[in-house]
Image (cartoon, rainbow, N blue to C red; front, side, top):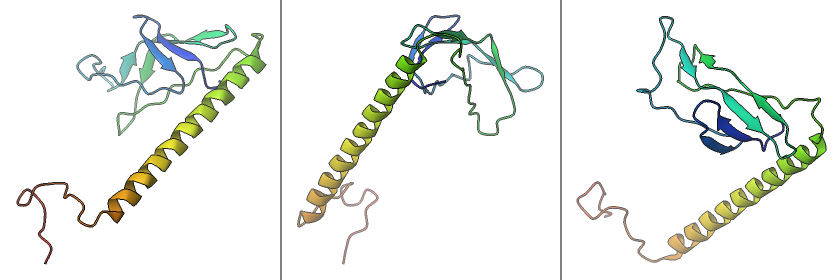
Length: 133
């Protein structure tokens, strides 16, 4: 699937935003079956071209970390693939710029911090800091 589809919970209608997306579940809301697998609501993916794809109830099993990946593919026969690919590229470019901006902000912060003669300690003395000799 090209990135950029809007992801919606098929049962509740909750809009999770633009894919790729991480969705967290409260363990109180998803109970394992007898085999230790979980059932999650299905998803609907809607691309800007109007293409949609939907999953049924999703059964996930076997993760030692509790993390699962669910992929939904865009229907190849639906028109507008180029539009969806352009949208995905725009999203990737925006994300790359956001990452570059964040790195630049961190670099500026670090430079200012390192130039400060006596940088503030993260904790007041006696609260987890080691006094320098």
